[in-house]
Amino acid sequence: MANWKRSLLASHYARGVKGECSVRIDGSKIVVSYEQHDGPTVWEGKEVAPGHFELTCARKGGRATLHRMPGEDLIEGHWMDGKDQGMWRIQLKNA
Image (spheres, rainbow, N blue to C red):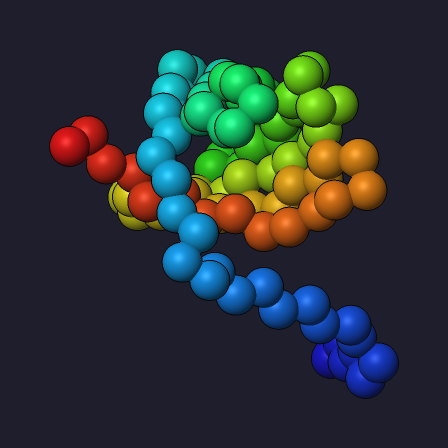
């Protein structure tokens, strides 16, 4: 049995920060785009394992991951943008 007794935990809480985005998954490619105060932001990537995506953002020089369980309308992961980093969760919706 594996046992990690000194693991590190980071929790992130949304404080009412919400926004709309567009998510497109086409085969093994994913694109997430949204508007920010300084213009449009686009994250693009590919599926590296079933339901697991790695993305980059050319505009911000960022890297990210997103994970989707089969049949779920929720994707979540981690992003890094320069010295900033955080978790993101996207509820997939059409309307």
